[in-house]
Length: 130
Image (cartoon, rainbow, N blue to C red; front, side, top):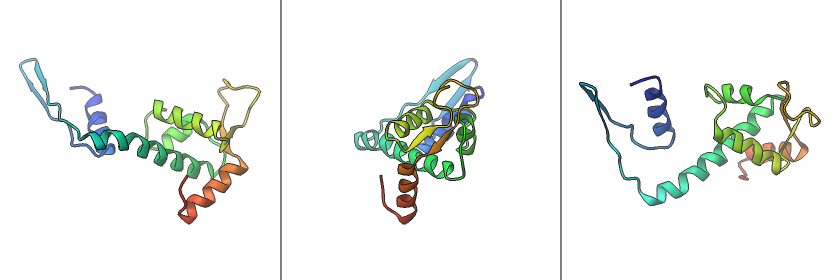
């Protein structure tokens, strides 16, 4: 068992799944796979993705942030693929924009809310969904 064990337990908890069971005896490892109800598999990723969009929009209300700053504020050790996808979706939906549109790969690149994003933020605060 290495450093990923606690991460796996946290990810299961975040996905509303039971914690994995681990056993270790004389070099042999056993992993217990549990069957997940099909309705949970279909609904859960979309729910988490939408929830993460709301969190990113709320964080950017305080001002521009880089992907790594967003990741840290969300409690992640580093930017996840899911965060990358959420940022891309928010950019595509014109909710956020680059602070350096001419230098997309700059290490100083940050994201900020657009007018549409600020409107969405107000909708989130008033209880309306995306």
